[in-house]
Length: 356
Image 1 (cartoon, rainbow, N blue to C red):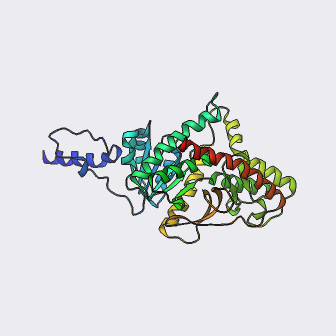
Image 2: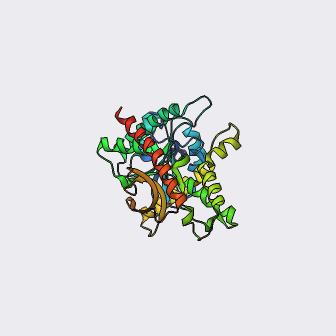
Image 3: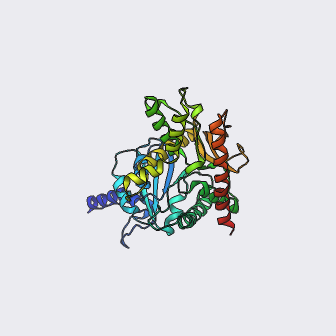
């Protein structure tokens, strides 16, 4: 009997992290949720992914499970998160994985988190207008940010949900309303634009993309995406035609993937890769590493707009320093004015959503 009880106890402890909030146990069992802690878990940061069962969320969750800086990984979604959690929890890496399903478990998913990554939202479906998409995703982001404000107000937030140009201002207004807003801790993820720029420029120059660094500023859609090709590292000279071709391709990279997938989705895998690249930079900054610099869409005084994407230095409290744009050529100066005009409307749309 004793051996059997010990085995049951061990099994319960191992499986507890899959369903932390709704363990079903018999009345006479000596086991309780409080005793069922997943063992292991290297020292590191606690990370939550909100929207972990989606097209971006699943590969993002898998890649974060591999990250050695993550000790606890919470996977939240309104559907299918138990399955994704079970699947990813079998990976033999240090992070302990826990799953959370639906609105009643959002607060449990967020409590005590250091970093919250938000890819939640719906992709655009046939027949759906951009306004339809905006209204759905804006509502989702608002609800999730209310949870963050309540349960982990000091967490750094990486916001991926589109349209980023509007959802970051929405998140800021939610945090302001709750009295928890710290502009350094709210980061719109634009890394996919940088990843594409590095890749496409490397192709033109015949280089390894890992050796190329292209600053991409502005926003995260269409003409608001402004690659500063005059500042490419390693330094290079691009012709006017090359600059126009590259700028256009970087701005329309998302459309390129949507068309290639022919109705079967959008950029999910490269987005997950870019999100993990940025999240890892945030974690290294939080650890205290020096010189961690990435582009992000943040509250900013670089232009007259309240939010703008540019290079930021990441540290223990998020975006600790925001860098100026540096010297622009004529083509980039024209592009900047176009980007700002479009961006101003998107930012205002987000702010108005909260106060309507």
